[in-house]
Image (cartoon, rainbow, N blue to C red; front, side, top):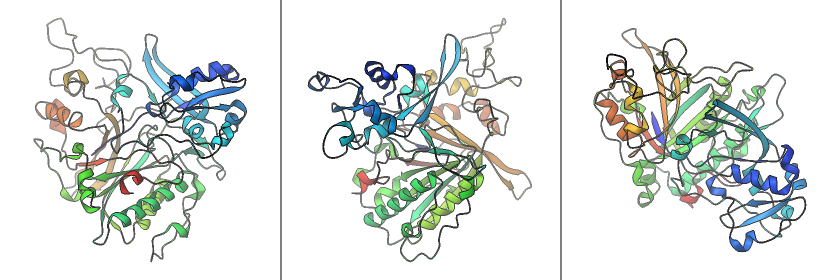
Length: 471
């Protein structure tokens, strides 16, 4: 499993709803959707400037808002965002269509009536600002923006934008197939060569996310391998590539002083049976797609572009339930039959033992007539609950895996568990320690692999992952 850090939520500026023709309504819409890095609050001087007819005020960098006309706004690529939350009326789901806020904040300022340059989102620190606590605790999760792109007949047209305030593949809905891979630098790799590799990977990811071939000009020096184009017919298929750095990365590139304290080694937990060959690594890549061929091709491309700089240390591949057309995306059901990431299910409908539907909050105070708790004291859902761990929360993203048979004939199968968080010392570690002391589910589990990586913030057009650190 890998624990990494995520930033704030990608948002849309809603422009296609009925009120979008009203500048005040559109501005209010942007305020309700804006992430922390694009706060709609402006400085008093800027906010006092009048908003003209047919204009919308947008917040760019902190305290530096600017205006853009609705006509220019509508020329930008449209996207969709799905919001799911729980209210007094039960589970709610709404889909909004508009312009991805990142696209608005990176348009040439000439289009907004301001001469010179481009206005972009502020670059985040390595661990990001804010975190997932407010996102998960608030009960709402906004998907990353998606756009349609030309594709072959019958191909998957879903395209996930590579550029944005945070990397893709964290807040985007989980795809059906994934590869988790780690790489180790070669003996000659230094800071400059590491930066060149991250530039190649980032440039390739931008093309792959759009379902485009990766040209030979992106390849590493001395490599004779070329893109086979084997997956082009399948379209983008919702592909995302997410890159991270291990603790040893900072030593290898001469930036040990910049290593985040949150990358401290994880403590040993009881009953761990960790395989060193399937843990650690200088670099981490999560590749996920809704088409297995697209995901495999992306993995091979990443490996090919690492020629001469980094070698694959380990790869683990997983899968999950495919969505049914016309239905909402189902919660991942692992190979033990559990709905992973919501609550400990009953065998019938996936609801907690205290009743309701899958997303109904379990009543941890409920007791049977004889005084015995309905949800046992050793239940996984009780021990892992935020209220039992000082409010510790994580964004879970898991896939099942099956790697054939072991030497004794038993299945080599289980779950790849990714926990996105800002600091494992206040998230994963206290929760895992509590689980290790008495989780009834533990008797059925064996922890065989573990890794920890930090994931830099998103990439602006023309940049690459980790640029703020490496330059």
